Length: 278
Image (cartoon, rainbow, N blue to C red):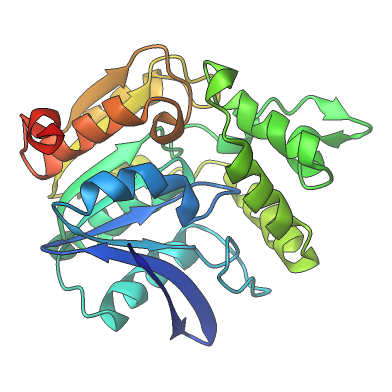
């Protein structure tokens, strides 16, 4: 069973999960999630890697400081996180907002990343635009989602191709955290930065040296599948895997297919499921 740990980075208490042995694999969650979103993947991946899954500042059980959140903030946080834990070179995977952070980190610190996996990441399209920003009582849905559990559930349902994959326990955990006014403030600030696109981003990720896999839900309505190919065109030698009948969160909706793609690429365990089934 993994350990929940806390470290101090620039005065911010950062909660993270560590589990497994062998080489380090850092997992980065998306907007309005925490490291809990990776639970099923950690169970499998920790057989091959030491998993480090932080709650990014502003999310989960980590502190929610009153700072200017944004891509630069999170990339520098990630470097300090790795430095503090003496992780000199790692594998890294990020979903949605975490995918953009992982890609920017791999571009800025190419000697720190061995292999990179980007999952339904923003960077080419604004994340918030896709989260059906139809207004509800005068404010966009992505702000209203902080106001009730049912709104949060709608936000998560928007991510899925098949809403039967909704995880009620995960919704309960995240909703309990959202009742904290500091969390709502950080979500609001992150929503602001995620509603725009950094024009320098495509040029930045051309500097990625790590072997890169791009995993995308074929039916993602939040960030279009075209963006997967934009990532591929920008990152030298990268490849794309599409997961059928899957929306924005393959790690939740199609976890078995997602784990197989992730681990076949990172650990080169092509007979992965047969191996762990015995």
